[in-house]
Image (cartoon, rainbow, N blue to C red; front, side):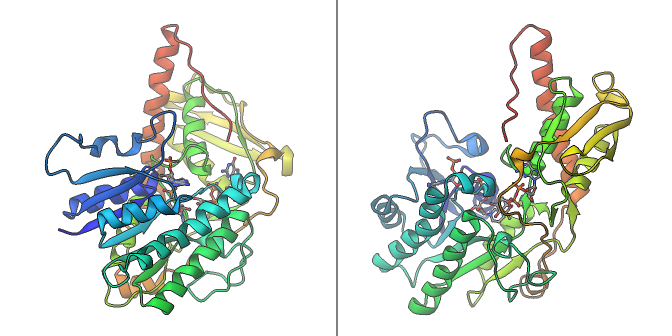
Length: 372
Ligand code: NDP
Ligand code: GDR
């Protein structure tokens, strides 16, 4: 039985990857951070009590900032595959916590690689690094492929640039089987609430249930290539099953704006939105409503507005991936379309909003966090 170690197992991708590897028959080890409140919601359905025998999912406390902890876990687990998914992964937050982001996202990757080397596991352990389309930043070529020059535009992307190159370096210097998956944005109902897609589906669902009035957005002109996390974790595994290690772009090859995403999500809720004005004065106005969202939402209501606090000091305006290499070498075909993903995310967030609305009608105090 193969053993995998996943850092960031409590995150969006970690949870889908853990499901996938358990299904494949792996013994899955995950590193979770100590926090004052529970942070395992995304993997609670996979949890196995430590008192059970033959556990297939085993969690270890740890942190990418703590070398001795990482070395101990690597030494105990002796993994066949390490998936380094842990990161301070929010681009906007990286401008507020640049040093922490560098420590975890850049040096954290080095700590793991060095741990593998220090323990003499470089011939046994295969390593996956969660690299990102944010490396392309101010894009030098469209669509972006593996050979497109990088131009990072945030402390997050700069930290991930180090992680990308240190992974390549350990592959070349020590013969480690190490791969970079240059993944474009991927989403799901498990996406963190402060990333733009989930902020939109959750915010609009709350508005449709009368829990919120307006969704405040940053740059709605930004263009992204959005896929589904469920599809993308399959490729993370596949990269580690090849004869030779290599780096791959994973993307859909289709691009939409943030505004397009809002319009599509609103339509799933029966709301037709018209955008008017421009810049910080732009608004999304309700043209018509049918179904569940009425009467909480009425024609003429302004349910989307711009708040400049969500603008970034340097923005990545456009990203569009060319996944030809992954298609050819890994047989990459995304299975879930953007419309199907939006349908799933809206349905999930609407159910949650309905539960909150029901609690509210019974007199319970429901607060919906809006800080993104
Ligand atoms: P999430 O933010 O959902 O998950 C990040 C995970 O990292 C969480 O489990 C988090 O723990 C953990 N983590 C954060 N800091 C530390 C630390 N110091 N030590 C140990 N663990 C830590 O990210 P995603 O699942 O969306 O992304 C997975 C990886 O892929 C990330 O590295 C991200 O940068 C990268 N990526 C993501 C893309 C996307 O579109 N989703 C695209 C390209 C790359 P906790 O739950 O306690 O916060
Ligand atoms: P991104 O994702 O920065 O691409 O990084 P995010 O969803 O945060 O932003 C996408 C685009 O939407 C614009 N935007 C807003 N973003 C947020 N979060 N909140 C808003 O209110 C808002 N309004 C507009 C942003 O400016 C941006 O242009 C994600 C993360 O998962 C990274 O870890 C990963 O590496 C990249 O995707 C690929």
